[in-house]
Image 1 (cartoon, rainbow, N blue to C red):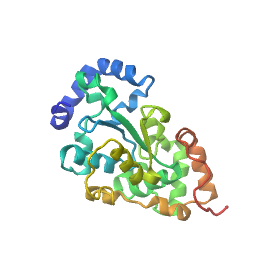
Image 2: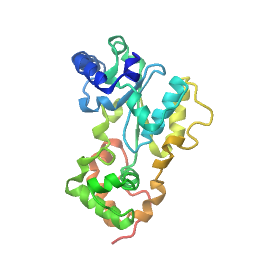
Image 3: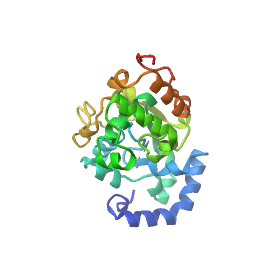
Image 4: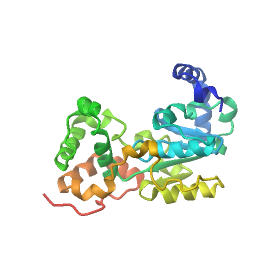
Length: 258
């Protein structure tokens, strides 16, 4: 990939994208078939590794980017820089577009029960989010109020809690590899090993240092934050993700019937 895509100004990058978009659209459509165009910018590309990664917020997104950057370049940026510097499908050159079949496309998906709770616990620690979306307390009661807000139009307000399917360029079955967040490290390492890629020692034992502040342990807090009413509301809100991502609607734990 041309160096300007990694280090040039954001405006220059947008201009080049716009000029090359018709060719990019034709080549991507010819290779992938039917795809969701608005999600093309979510697919990070690492031609050096032969990988394309469909990013989804709250699904170990930054940790995967940092790992792939370390593998490709031998260095790690902070989480803001890695997102800005990483090229996407829209940044591929003409020559790279002709070799899309060399890119192994993968995605990380997550159980909606865990993901929406993680988004709540992570985002609403931030005063800007509380001012912008609502002063929800980081308590089970505040989580319930947040879910009601989602049901009343808040779902589309932010990608951290919007549907995973909206950020996916292809249907689930069309990906070369699907990694489930619940088995994240094992499945990611297995994929990289299968492609004979050199994995840094002790990778993914924990989140990268620049990303540790985002940890919420949502999977361990499910029973604390959910009751039957909140479980049913999430099952309705995320019915599309449950169905299309293959997660059972059955709650992965015990809830108090209320």
